[in-house]
Image (cartoon, rainbow, N blue to C red; front, side, top):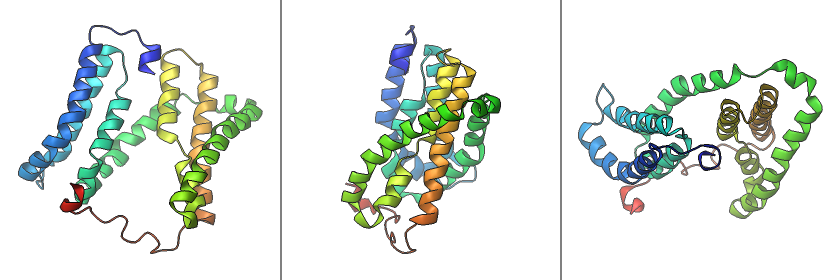
Amino acid sequence: MSAIFITPNIWFPAFLAGSVALIVLLPRIAPWFFGHYGDRVIEPEIKLVFVCLFALMVLADASKGHAVLPAFILGLVMSRHYAQHRQEQERLRVVAFAFLTPFFFLKGGMNVSLAAVVANLGLLGVLFAAKMIPKLALVFPLARRADPKHAKFITLLMSTGLTFGTISSLYGLNAGIIDRTQFSLLVTVVVLSAVIPTAIAQWRYAPIRGDFEGLSRPIPAEESV
């Protein structure tokens, strides 16, 4: 989205360089930093992560870019570290889901017009089908190959797109690419595409307790090499 819709300024190279530097360096710095300063009341490991995220946000704002993609990639490269340190992962998850996520969705939800959604129910259904059918069709063969027993459950859970769908819709609204009616329809579709498949998966295809036992265990250090 940044490459297509923004006009790069003098800060954009700094944003790109800062993003690459954090993505490359943080996974290398984090084990040492967490080992020396972790497990303290002031939670320095969480502060380090948020300092990196805030740095991305400041550079993105100055460059008229968007910090979502580098932040997402940063999470991916840190995933192995957090798989080995589940307590740190749980602490960060609590902060994110209890504090940051609600504000983000409240900001997006304040721009939704229910009247526009009700007035365009037919278009809403078309957009919902256009979003879900391709995802289900593409995910199911891979899920069936990976785990035939739970393919339907995995497919439904993997066919959601709440976060990036909301982010891209809000980006389009702020950039003037879409109007409030279009934004309202898109966000409603995104929310429905997250709620409905998840509810069906939990109600109809939820695995029996113990099916995935052991899959969430911390990764031993020797397996991470």
